[in-house]
Image 1: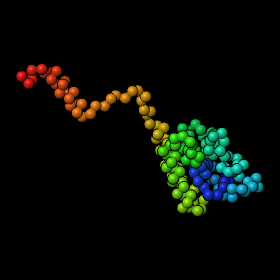
Image 2 (image 1 turned 180 degrees about the vertical axis):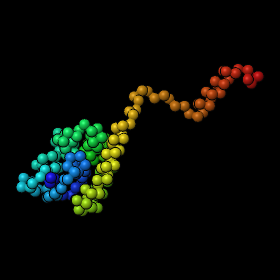
Image 3 (image 1 turned 180 degrees about the horizontal axis):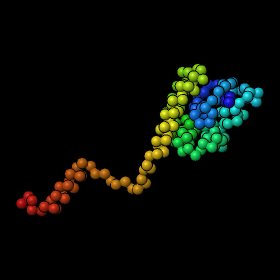
Image 4 (image 1 turned 60 degrees about the vertical axis):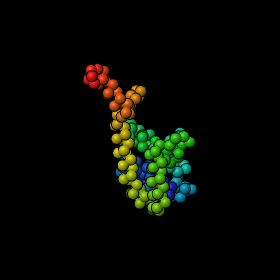
Amino acid sequence: MNWITRRGLHVDRTASAWLIKSHIDPAARFMFVAPDADISALEGCSFDMRGADYTHREGKCTFEVLLDAYSLAGDAALCAMGRIVREADVPSRGRRLTEASGLDAIMRGFQLGVPDDEEKIRLTGPVYDALYTYCRERIAEKPRSRATPRPRLTYRQRFVRHVEEETAANPNADA
């Protein structure tokens, strides 16, 4: 199937292309058009552009919209990835995920250094493969305890406590 998007790929469009190729349509072919192109005259599914079949909706980036549309939201790693992509693509006014800042910088480098969009998809694929693996591992990690942490003693405090315990256990040792 043809997948249509605007030229000059950045975060959401490279991530969406990766998602399409890896989870939705392995035989996908991509077409890159001007931002003001009449997509109704083109044959295929459009994404991440004005009037597209799949684009930003209800605070979600295109990547997340595709997750919902193709019933992929059950994959927690893809959802975690979607949040990173959203924050890299459209930074929130609050605190930004560290991963989002890194992804934005990397994809900005590809945007500036690789003029051919087809080549950009090919080169960024392994970056998204790695990000997906990272998200899967983060999801699998044991959650940290919410209990109050035990206070840590300095070396000096541990030494003094040890001497006090030894003295209490053997009061006549120095006599």
